[in-house]
Length: 144
Image (cartoon, rainbow, N blue to C red; front, side, top):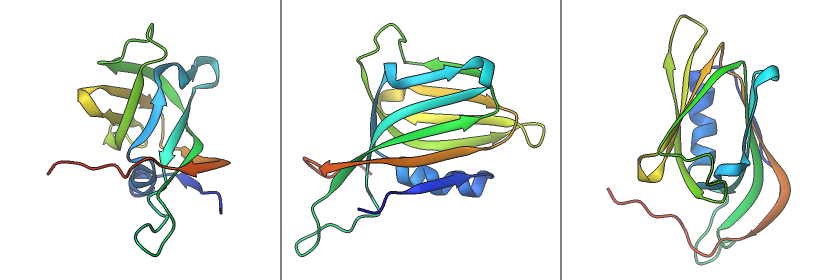
């Protein structure tokens, strides 16, 4: 396994990171806002979309990873109860709404209508695999 390490410094980069965290699973309690450091850190189990899978290929897998954002000035959540730290969220996408450049809002879109909105001074996101991987029970599917 070659660990994935990505950095996003603009909206196009963030789209690439978004593709790699699509269908990641995380617990509400695994989202940490380090307010004094202006950083949000999220531990997650991401689906390794970059791994080929199929009849003659490797089985689909998940990997432990961490996603973090710098320059975060505010964190707002809709449909997420911080008191329910063991609730599982399925991350669908990362989106960016530009504000007064380079600031804006990074939106984490979850299944079931839940969202987290990070007000940021600039785009700086990092995604890194932490080393462990395991065979996924199934491949995520989405209705069209």
